[in-house]
Image (cartoon, rainbow, N blue to C red):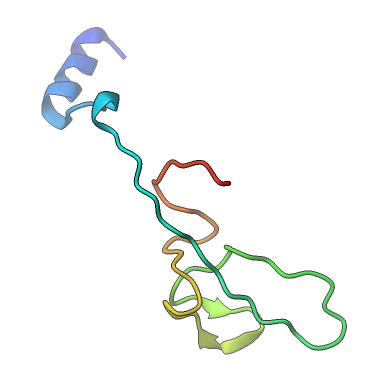
Amino acid sequence: MTPELIDSLQKRFGSADFSRYQVVRAQKYDFVRLLGTGTSSVSFFSNPIGASDPSATTVQKTLEQTNLVKNASFGQEYFALT
């Protein structure tokens, strides 16, 4: 990209001002049902709200079960997990 193009894009859409970022604490949670015998592993944070629950294919995950909004992703939020 040329400097003129970058300058034009920054004027039109803006650019990140990292001095204005702040820490916002939020909990992420996910509930996974355990299947019967023969289950050797489960996957947390892989299905968002509204997706089919892998252990009960006719049931969709609700906000009570997870607050994940994007499949296998925490979205556009950048944070540190502790």
